[in-house]
Length: 396
Image 1 (cartoon, helix red, strand yellow):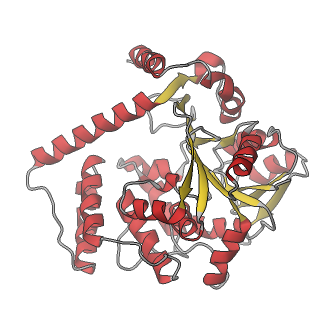
Image 2 (image 1 turned 135 degrees about the vertical axis):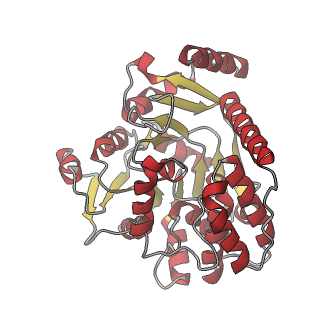
Image 3 (image 1 turned 180 degrees about the vertical axis):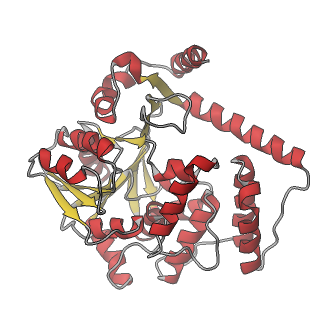
């Protein structure tokens, strides 16, 4: 029977970590372990973990405060055997997740899996208008994918990191981690963005993996989520963004780039780091000018252009590339609004949204426990769309 290792790096998030741990302990599978890597938390993290008194939980505290990547490396070093995944400290597994994952691995005869996640907006998430909201992907497809083909699609921005075999929202056999460590002087991570980096290096060494459009975990968006803070441009999150960058000095951003928080730049950075470690397989085509052009487009879409244009200009100079910026503010405004409309429609037409207040749910553990019954509330895409429209009307 496979052993599954759920690794939870954490720092000062005991208020969500408690519910994440509760979701893991409710998993209906006999052979798994939870590894909590506490990055010198100053809140009640240690007390929360110890209060469970469960032998399946292994608690480790880092010897000093580390950046996110270094903490992930520390946590990963505690896994000895079996399959490994990294779970956010505001995320959750469903009770039947490991049973389903184990069955999919058996049926596909693979030792790596990735999946789409459901998303839960915590009541404390002040970045969003509608809080305490659960979204569940409607698709239920399962497919076998080829690692190197998907890697090329990622580098060409036709796929997202979440489509790869990665450690976040995925399980891989620990032997792949060791294979990469053997190539890199005993370390696995070499990027400030460890989740995206894991998608690139694992796709480089894994031939086949199974991908499930059916959700097998829930990604939580809380007020302290790094990703949620990094994509905000408002001043009230500037301090949190600055702290993230300051604590990540052990893994500096690649010297040929600047830290611009859009996918083309993040993928570019992870690719360069992996390329320098000779992990990227032969034959992968990479186009720096294309990546810079797409970075500009993403900055326009996300309304980051004024904030990050000097950084984009520096990237162009460092790489001897042409920086193609829009000449008219009207074009920027139209591109931004068009992107928002398309993204909004795509999201609300492909996911079932539920106000958790209506079900007495106010944390991700309860959302995970009710997930399977909630996903059965809709049986057709039109029923889902109608429900989403009704939810939006009530919110306005």
